[in-house]
Structure formats: structure tokens, C-alpha cells
Amino acid sequence: MKSIIKTLLFLMSFIAIQAPVYAQCAMCRASIENNVSNGETSIGAGLNMGILYLFAMPYLIAAFIGYFWYRNAKKRKSKFIFHGEKY
Image (cartoon, rainbow, N blue to C red; front, side):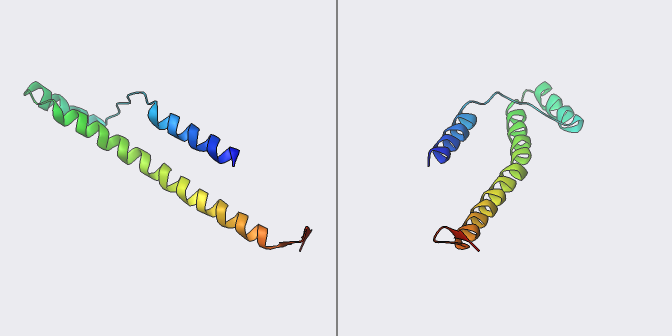
């Protein structure tokens, strides 16, 4: 139980404390620079958030699959233990 609480606290602190990350491809950067020179700055922030969203999703999906795999493996292992004896 303690390890679950520690893990949740770590994940919550990791999510709460984020450094601003700005990553763009060359084509996106040119598009943003063109829009900024025309006076429109809101597109850049939205594009950066979209890039970060696309970056994070595969890792979150892998984490969920890993968690459910671990949970099912733990349940299967506990089925084979009967009165302290392993079968």
C-alpha cells in the first residue's frame, strides 16, 4: 500500500511541476514565424501543446498496458499459491 501511495505522489508531483518545453519541426516553425510576423501569436502556443500531446500519448498508453499486465500477472501468481505452498 505504501508503494502505491509513493508512486501516486511521485506521478502527481511529476505532472504538477513541469518545465515549459517547446519543440517544433522546421515546417511548423516556419509557419509560426510567418503568423507571428503577421501579428497572430495564438497559433504558436496551440501548436506547441499539440506537439507535446502527440509526444506524451504513446508513453501513457504503454504505461497503462504495463500496469494492467503487471496486475493480471500478480493475480495469476496468487492463484497458484495455496496455503503457503507453491504449485
